[in-house]
Length: 347
Image (cartoon, rainbow, N blue to C red; front, side):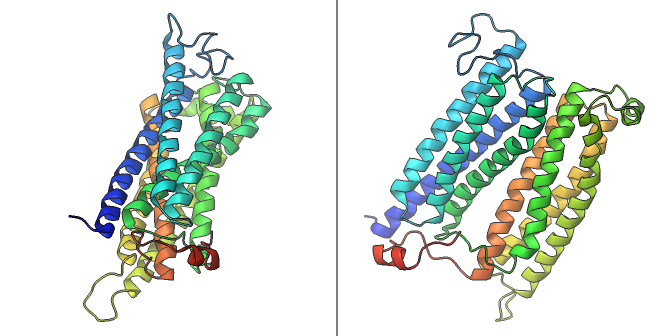
């Protein structure tokens, strides 16, 4: 017969499996949203929301309607799954627990993501629309999507790792991590403009694309050059950050001299290596996609790599900051009310 701690461990394991499933499905839904934009299907349901051409289920959907309608269905399922995950987290974990906060943030950003989708449809900022409103909202929308992915991955990661408290942003490593995090976000913003420019003003060849800069027909064409220039700088920042974190992890080997990693530094070493590798591959994937003529599969692959780079960077940041603070407490232990009041989690 299991004792209280064993039952808590089983519950936490079940929750972590569910959280990983929610993250994986949400990532697929986000990728389908990318395909929606790449295939110019954002107007597949007209300007009706949440209805599609005035109906709950469109009668004879065309391709764009099918893509838009299925995107709405998949996004709705994400909302239900994240809601269930948040309720579960608030019931299973004590007040102030890291998983609670990450799950709550996941729900918040899922709701705001749905609202962004509604705004885009109602205002007609879809398909090949290049209005000022759409240009301005793109970075804000992308930021919300990235924050959603960050909250989802941290919910699953912290549940699996048994993290009790959110790492403090007062960590010395924040100064090392912040340029890479902000640079990756900025790269996503310029990438959103570049993707919109590629959709609205396609170029058949590389030469034609270069020629568009000589006499740009729209501001987006001029903004497109920012993305590759920023990519070189951000990749350099990420690689430098990764090597510095690897060096710091190597210096944090067990003082006993047995060559063992601490509870977090081993992950910092591995994740730093993955971040550097993904950044380098992404730097090659962008030009390759252009040389191939920007095929939908290439653009989707480029966006998937960007998402994987971001979530790996988020987990790396969490582990690096937590490793500097020391080993976390076990989530299987209850947090007393007095402790929660006198030692609140710092965000």
